[in-house]
Length: 295
Image: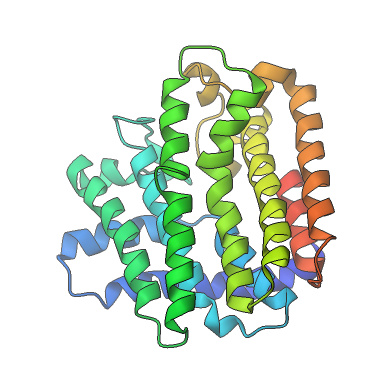
């Protein structure tokens, strides 16, 4: 449930992102089936947390959101690519994503792989082609986003996650996995907003630390929802983590322990947020939303 100032912001800006994402792909001169597969997953819904974090950061510094829309869409394309590939038979082998058949169930495995590849690579083309941003800003954004998405970030985290299946990890090992698998892309969303806003390096560091704690909290909440969530709300079967013998926070800490860990990371995130000069209402409400969400 989204409340307060954040609800109005979400209602307006999520609509912007939802409309822009398919429109960007529709205008590309690409094979029809590839276009359809890319758009299918972009239009499958989702909370758009990453674009909203970037835009909320810009708004907090009273900067024009128009400079952030393409970058926000690029980050959501990277996130969507990762979901398509996560669902593949060689990875999690999931049939449903956001309550709809997964991409490979609709378009076949080969086309799903290529749709994910297309979204990932086009995200960087979208940023580099922007007419609103100076070249040095585009270069820094691409550097930060490719690091967050690549082998030092999300991809590396996915590898550690797969290697951890079937063995019991420590909480520190699990946190390292999710710091990269989930946290890095969330963190770069906020950091990209700070780069676009032109803030100091110290300000960026504090905001990135805020977002990294938020990323861990997001994953802990996902693990909790897999235990006590509602399938119709979260759009995928409940209990799949336990069925697949995955390491999760509830498995290692118990449900109450996982909830305490969630509260800790939300509290730590806010400490870093309060160190900055940003008008923090939107980002603070986003932290509360991540902690209390039901899907």
